[in-house]
Amino acid sequence: MAEKILILGSNGMLGRDLVQAFLDFDVTAWDIEDLDITDSDQIVQKISELKPEIIINATGYTNVDGAETNEELANQINGHAVGELAKTASQIDAILVSISTEYVFDGQEKDVYDETSKPNPINVYGKSKALGEELLQKNCQKYYLVRSSWLYGKNPQVGKPRGMNFVDLMLKLAAKNKQLEVVDDQFGKPTYTVDLAQAVLQLIENKKPFGIYHLVNEAEKLGVSWYEFAQKIFALKNITVDIKAVKTAERPDKAKRPEHAVLINTKAEKLSSWEDALREYLK
Ligand SMILES: NC(=O)c1ccc[n+]([C@@H]2O[C@H](COP(=O)([O-])OP(=O)(O)OC[C@H]3O[C@@H](n4cnc5c(N)ncnc54)[C@H](OP(=O)(O)O)[C@@H]3O)[C@@H](O)[C@H]2O)c1
Image (cartoon, rainbow, N blue to C red; front, side):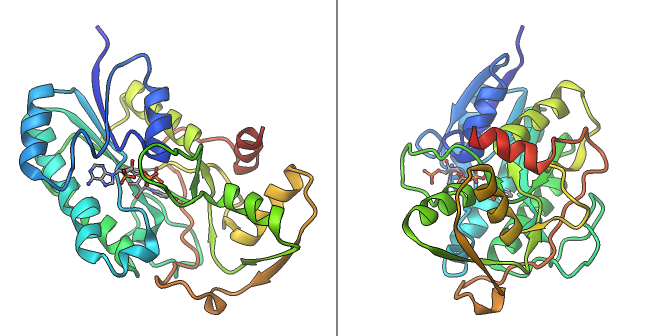
């Protein structure tokens, strides 16, 4: 019989691709309307009743600048709720997969961050995700803590309006402007949510040892900048647009961004290259 799996945040950008990736399982897909994960009583009651064998937490307070002024909510969703999920998973002996981010690192490392690197977040969003990581590891044993970065995927328009992913935003802006400004001093690894969802499936199917995993599309060792990412998007779409490289310091963003938050995957099967993944998305 197919294993029973609960996907939380199932209307989100990654959540939707997770639901697709796990179609051969007995999937229950919940979003905030079905279970608000800031309500710990509901977590215990609803999840204990369902008794899934695997829980994947793809929820998140994901507005990085918004978190600066909504610290309590960001901590609730990205931090404390993950701890409550971990306690419940442990009680019902379920595996818990929770998605985290390169923003738990300060980005000061001129090398890469591997699965053993120590978090040191520099903004509220990063701190809230680091809190979730800590509470996950403290409260259950059977966990996969999956860090990824610079996600893009099909933009769900279900429920509340969401911010656009970087690829769609660049295409929209290029249609309206002759020149775009893009930062060239932040580096990372762009990752396609379809590939990330497949990589999470592989962890489960291959019964990889529990622990921390960095699942990102492969890129040059030190990652790519947002500027290079934008250049590649326009090259693949044959769009001619003048892109001006700017520095992070020139931008009005509320939250501080890590400069070199480049994750390296040393434990799981490698995902495809970021260029191939982008080509696939833009098809
Ligand atoms: N986007 C990135 O670049 C990136 C990079 C690395 C890691 N991550 C992590 O990957 C995960 C998925 O990211 P994403 O970009 O797919 O996020 P997303 O599109 O914003 O989806 C998050 C989902 O969580 C739901 N949610 C929010 N608050 C909730 C609550 N209290 N209870 C239940 N569900 C709630 C949202 O519902 P509503 O929209 O209705 O509120 C939404 O469906 C997150 O944990 C994020 O931190 C993202």
